[in-house]
Length: 305
Image (tube, rainbow, N blue to C red; front, side, top):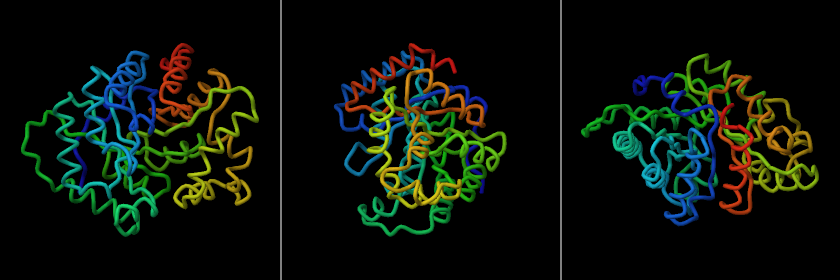
């Protein structure tokens, strides 16, 4: 059963080559978020990706806040958990946002992780099967409202089977916590046409010890989740690399740190490996500091990548 019919080439153009990924805005007031989204748009970033947590704003409602504060910016969920709403609600909610905001919404879907799923009261099961069944229901849902353009969707995909599903049943993939080497592998699996939009975490700090310390605080959460560690092992990383927040080599591969030129170099590494769009996640103590980092990167012509 195919997914919605979307002009993927046009979608890639609208998303732009570089976007912003953030999960901390959800804890801020809606008024602050509106100002932040408008600034992300004014800085020239093509898409704002928002993470979803059990304690934060629901991702489709959150997207509506951001879309309502902007004129051209695409807003994408990175990701909306399939366990957070049933498939009919996801299909109807995504299409409502697409209709209301001139096709500027992208539904990023993922199967999440066992601890987060258990916290919602669900039983985690085979990820690819769960996603396929969810997409079956989405595609069988009839939307009765006016719909100039169905909402595009991307799947959180790391390994071969989920990447294949993203190519077959969605407009592409949104890998998280990955390297340019993974991007090249993902492009080979997806083929040339689907959207490939990896996330890239960055630290604007030229001091190696301090930058890696910041990166390890971030990485320690993800290195406790099998979905990510299994993917890294498949890419050739050893157990020793995954311990204690990551070896220096793994830290440097996952988190780009240094001056803006080093960050832009990593973005180009993903683009050269086959990415269509790279969403940059600056690590910062506060959302305001995150915006400062985005201003610095934009001033270095990151958005012209």
